[in-house]
Image 1 (cartoon, rainbow over the protein chains, first blue to last red):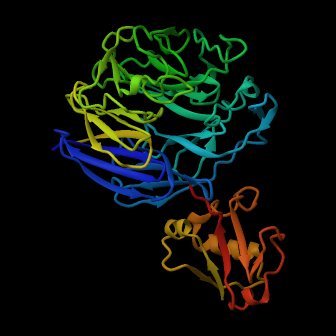
Image 2 (cartoon, one colour):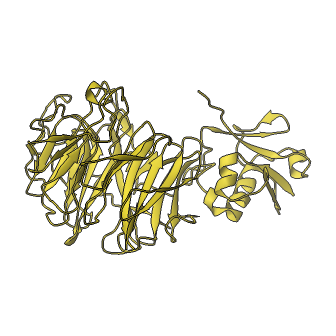
Length: 371
Length: 99
């Protein structure tokens, strides 16, 4: 019997939520790694029992955990993220140059093509790769050493590489996003990188259509259309249909185009989800109403999804990695909040229920659809 | 035998029961020797107490022993005799924080 496993990273540990195909009754397991910040967990698409977790702490630094039994037991694997060569400098908050300094792993992306290969997006922004199941890590340094690297700068949350997308049909093509540098693409497995930010406009940088410097919050694609990407930027929801060569805005009739996560429906490439947030000064939903917005037209025309979500006095945030979809016939949509709620919809967003309400602040959500 | 007392989260990470571990050292008893022996027995602790590249102590941790803060001593300075003889523990302490 098929089911789903929801992997929840929080400020104080990891939780694993499981259900059958109906997705009405849930088992909550955790906390795993209690007291540690779990920025992200993600399972291998080739071996669902293999799950990677980024465990970090201001006191004790970064650890990577790996499970080979679906999260029942864990093993600490390699945690040495050494930049290739002598790291240069990037722009600091005050405009001066600042040395690259590793802080934590924001995102783990297991390969679509090899169960022992996994990518890690880190702060200060760089991309690492392991080909031995996380035991050792090497930097794909062509990204950090891009000629624009000295112009990249941290947002308030740090200069993080937070999004890694793979082209299902082309193992050499990856897309990544960095706050606040923008989006980049490689077509040679990570050796060389191209900024793909044409069409973005950001009025918080001196040159609002600069090649780099944009605060991209999240990217998403549908596996059947790997050249079409959707982007939630610091402000603006954007779309490209040519692998990032040119973007155009699809915020349309959203009540607000600020937000963090963006996701594409598992079976409908033109159905997209965002969670509008009032502003970058007020990280909570407009009017105290928690609303997911869905577009069935690839953007521009959006509808509010509210059934089962709090519609008054709600002032939580939904962070960039805290939304995911399952691939069951009736697509499930999931998101977590900084208030510790995890909401699930088993019908593409029409109706929602809280799986769990009182976790620590949710940082990330991933979903595994199990056979 | 050197007694090393560890903070809660590192004991959980290394699956250590009790407050710490006992280590046998063959050479001079220094911070570096103690931490080398600790990491050799518990590889998952590499990088959690000191940076793996620079070997510098992580900033929110301190090393105490015999009512002294040894955090700023050079890593090859001999530890107090009481630590070397097992009479007093070597304490790895996390900065306190609350809210």
